[in-house]
Image (tube, rainbow, N blue to C red; front, side, top):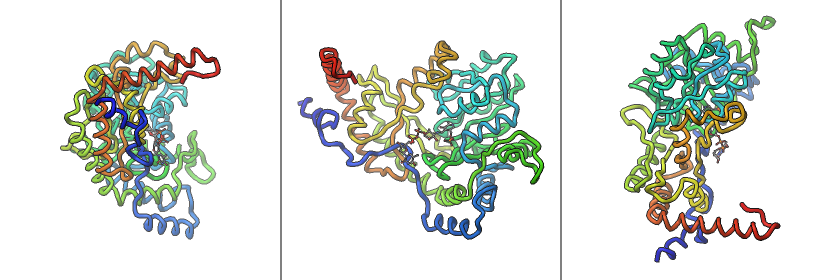
Length: 417
Ligand code: T4K
């Protein structure tokens, strides 16, 4: 009986639940006519870049929305992180989590700054303020926490710990545009924060990012640095780079911004559908959003407890992939287990136990405008069915990979997968 039931799963020969892959991060597109009109106006104006009117309008709207004094739009969030940390004179060592997209660490390493990886809170996903102290050395120059999934860090405690050591803080808020902390929009909490408007973010400008800050001097410096340091036509006052956002990016950003409420509402409905579909599955926990705050609901993240589900996260990933559900293991295996960090600090994991344990358990599921509630319900049904027969699915998958390994061992022409 269980065998018949399992045979229906695509991984064991059944028909995939979805004819086409469902992805994490398919871009949300706003009103195409509005976008096309904006692009037409750019083409007629023939101002394509170098901080034209579309970029300045986007910056103003972003600053108003977040409630900060300054916003500098950029080509992407990685370059924005590089520029703002450089403007703040971060150097030598900066304390940051490993539980993040590799861009956070690379933005530092690119400038020869060592990312000093700090663990996350036990049972949480964010930098643990209690562990910052252990990583502070005479070479520390800043802290770069991440508001991962758009859920805020323990902002107040981090700021007070950092202040105690005289360290400036920049939040990597790549995921957190449109979210709040204690009723105030994320973006204005420290020296500066950085948003991403990459295609996969709920609000996109194709590629794009922004530095937001209330510090006028910093804003001026960042503005110069993202334009080669040009203060005037023939006068360069800073080392700089090209971090500029183009007019077409800003046109997309503005069009996305107009549709923001619709994007959030859609994500919220998907989130609620995931929540009700997953709530009674033992060993599967959906990372929740605090609905007393503003949230963008752009990431649907589950944690799997294999001791209860009997099926591992990676096995579930494979089962879902066969059904055309392209879930992702963000941010496996963790920055500290990627190069060059692994080579530089092979034992970093010893101080990152919570991070390592979490990264072996998390899975990000598809959402956004390209995914609807019916599809979410189907995904949660699959997860429920698989976990119900977790042990049988796991044994069958293991037997299959064991068989393919032994076939490979007996046949030198076959490579084990
Ligand atoms: N800090 C943090 C904490 C971040 O998460 C990120 C970026 C950054 C900093 C740096 O921000 P940016 O410099 O990128 O502005 C994606 C994004 O590329 C990346 O922006 C994002 N975080 C990260 C979490 O996710 P990948 O490698 O997973 O993307 P990719 O291409 O596999 O896309 C995911 C899925 O989305 C695909 O399976 C299909 C779908 N997709 C993607 C694109 C780009 C589409 O359907 N259409 C598209 O155009 O990194």
